[in-house]
Amino acid sequence: MIKTPFADAEAEVLERNGTRLVRVRPRHDGDHRAWFTANTEAFRSAMYEHAAVMVKDCGIVEQSELAVLAEEISGRTLEYNERSTPRSRVTGKVYTSTEYPADQSIPQHNESAYSENWPHNVFFFCALAARTGGETPVADSAAVLERLPADLVRRFEEKGVVYTRTYRTGMGLSWQEGFQTDDKGYVESYCADHNIQTDWDGDLLRTWQKRQAVTVHPITGKKVWFNQAHLFHVHALPEDVREGLLEICGEDGLPRNAYYGDGTPITADELATILGVYDETTLAETWGTGDLLGIDNILTSHGRRPFTGDRKVLVAMTQREA
Image 1: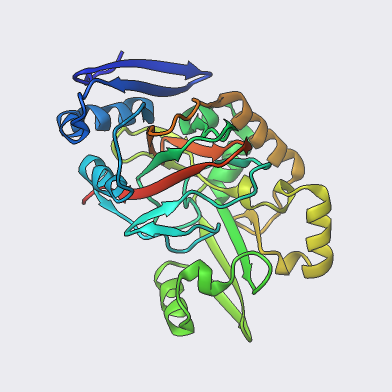
Image 2: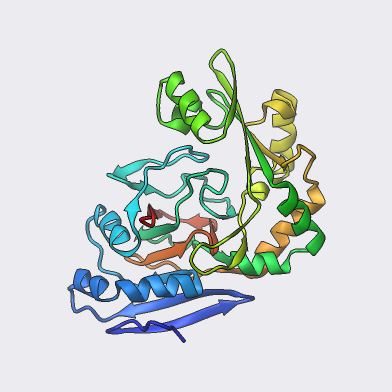
């Protein structure tokens, strides 16, 4: 049941272990912009209620239209700053989804939870569906919190998470790509304004930033698991890659890593527990070319499954107006 029903559409709620996604099949007779305008409130309401909404064959033709619809539904679009993964700008504030090898998964994560400037909503448009796989799974952040062991949640909630990064050319992102500038002064100013500690060694930059592990959604009041500790943590890497990086860089020079907020280690067993809960709660709907997925970035995480063939998924991120 959807509190604010979609007009001129068939809608159903899919569910798996506390994670929900509203799948909508519109009847817009070719005028998709009018359909979205008529259903803006329904879309917003469904994201607050169920966190994720997929509109099948949504009608978008021009890539720039993704940003227009995203702003109509949920506020101003954002630049992708303070980057942790490689992406390319397509047009305006529309980007490619994370450019990552097709045979690998991208773990569940709340977009930019390591930053003070995370998006409230993320919109994905499937310009070309993969031959097989390539889904963008979602996992309800409140359901994840509820399933995690209480003592683990308490430690994370009390201590928070420290994210460490080392920006160097040729291994992970350079600081120029991460901050989208060649100006060290700008990077220093940005980091000072966003509570990021910095240490320069020539052209090598190390950063530390402490962030929340759990937060409360400002509209719904739901308490949720909201961090990327499991994604930054060195044990998230395959063993051979991890050992190679540790040998080359040492723990202090890893491209990225995560600790408890007091600097104590997050153990491999704790990481495995978190990843196991994500696996239990993940729900994936098959992409079709022309589909649109909108998520509330606090209420749900997203990831990417491996795929074969060509795949093109575009992204626009938004923040609600104050």
